[in-house]
Length: 109
Image 1 (cartoon, one colour):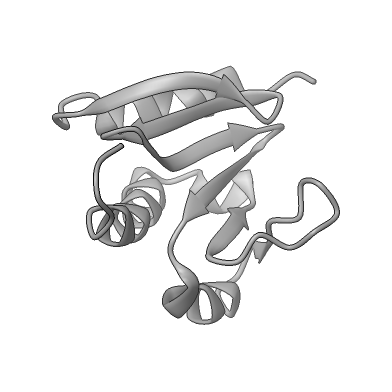
Image 2 (image 1 turned 90 degrees about the vertical axis):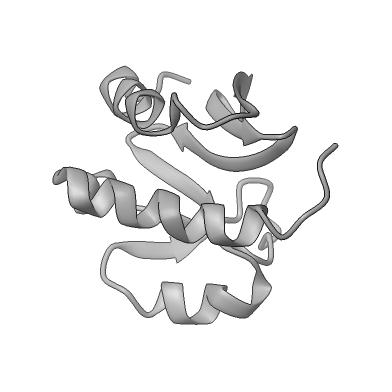
């Protein structure tokens, strides 16, 4: 499955200076991990973001989002953000920030 290389590069540019960031091929795309825990990823033309179970409902009420059900089972605490919502850099930074807010509460792997 192909993924949006341009979106992946934009994410890489946004998170590149964070200590503990790495990238790994996953879900037919690329995932960005913070201290070994998945932060965001690109699958197809969309971004997946780990926002945590407490923030997921609020995030799913925002335009261009849907549940992440890659395997047919909803993954709690994750959202898929339509690539068109991420056309502006501020939108991308906002979603990465939401994910980072949650992932930084988790212990490093």
